[in-house]
Image (tube, rainbow, N blue to C red; front, top):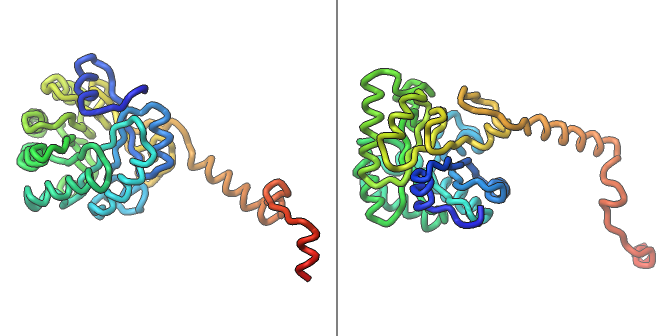
Length: 277
């Protein structure tokens, strides 16, 4: 990737039928690796509540958490577009608070856009945030912040009413001004219909191949998080085992005094040492 990926890049990619790549990052080192690998967009997801902070859901994540992690990611990125999640209750109370929190994620967190969950019911918030000159990404289907309403992490849109609502949600979000919409855990053919029904790109996660792009949680992709194993995740590496083996080897070498070796130590002149006694 030779130039910065932007909101316009998202829209152009859909027009050219070019798939969009997105992964999550929560820290400088991983963000730098993803950016240098050519990933076009990086989501600083509230999934950090689970894969970084160790909670059972994303509901405990705060705006301050998001700002902290967005800032760390921003330091490692040169080309990818950074999107920061708006966490639970950061856009649910009022339009004014929604604008304020979105603005903090952009101004303090150094993200280029925000993402919020929901369809028709959050259109007023989307319009207001957009009016504040902040790009917004939508997110429908399985919206993790609604886990208690859904009764768990379940596929959405399998029934006529649900499916029709998702199509209407996508159209409403497009009209409200989002530049892209995440479709999570919905049937592949429904995702195809939604993708063809809107002019903005759809980014799938558990929504099949017809979406305009794909996103995964990087910790899942690399085999670094095992508390949940969604069907839609493809594990491209098992870094958890690699890390465990490396750490075990380190511990064994410390115990056996194989590490550190001379090449890992610093020296001092004997003439200096002799003056210390």
